[in-house]
Length: 220
Length: 224
Image (cartoon, rainbow over all chains, first blue to last red; front, side, top):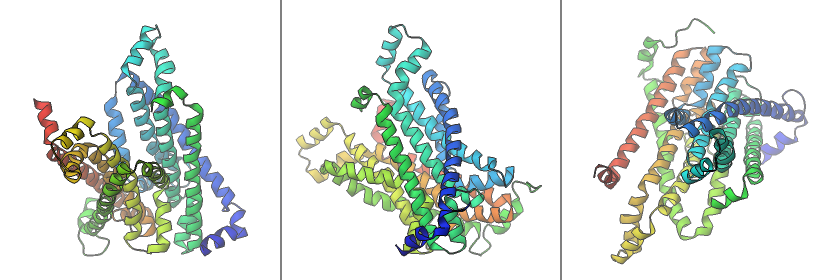
């Protein structure tokens, strides 16, 4: 507890480029950028693969690879290979690790729609893309959102570790604190990141309530 | 960026088993211990907890919620928090990873037991199986595929998450990443990634094999 008071009570931690607000903003910026790029790639791709059934193997492989690949190793290797100093090399692994959960869940969601429902939509005269956007997408939405949530959490988590390779953000409090044996900074940073992760979790729960059709929710 | 080759084989040979605590073999052994103990502990805790959630349904919602929250916390955050309790020891990695394993396995156990068809359960009752024997000989075997699916996810994640522990000084093969980063030296990083992925693929394969051995009927049905 004393560590928390030390950390949050210290006025120096609340201002300047390494203060809590600046670090939080950095963390959010990187995370949001990586998350948006990943979503823009993975949601359309997952919908396409789920709708056409082509490329399913790619989804399975990416899911397994993403789970087995160690984040820290990937970060360190990519940053050393591309070059230290800029944001881009850190963004690459963040995006790469965020894509699989979105891809898998979007694919599973679209794939898992009741075939009767799909046939009914075709029977009513909808075209392929109309079936995808008007029928499959709303029904698959809970799973798509689950994928996005897992990806967002993954990004926040990886961005924390990325502080080690020179990225700013809240992870710095932990990494720098460990380097200088300042445990109030380590614990304070950990608590801030935990709060951020929980906020993301809560945000997606609320989003789920707001956008998923009540009819779809009842079935689940 | 430098002209360093991606892999220097002679470095691997020299450091595989050189007797120092940073020998690749020693790191691999530590890694295996820190990755598998959480899965074993997790399974031992998840089975009774999952059974409890089946018996008292009201328990499941809060348990699942709590596990969901735990799962959303970055591993480095949990390691840091445990650091103040357990210090610089392997427990600082093993205990948080046990929580991650639980977050995957408790839902798997509950889903697995829920997946037992009612007619199967009733047949067992009608044949005079008492609850304990019914659980051990009918319900758990039928639940094996779902539980093992969870176990595969938990094992592979655990193997890869241990490496983050390197940031708090207990990362098994993850220490190779720190080493490679500090010396701008690719070989240890590549070796670390390769061994971790290999370990994950191998464990996953063993679990698939275990599932085939534990559920011979699913194969019989396919060939029949």
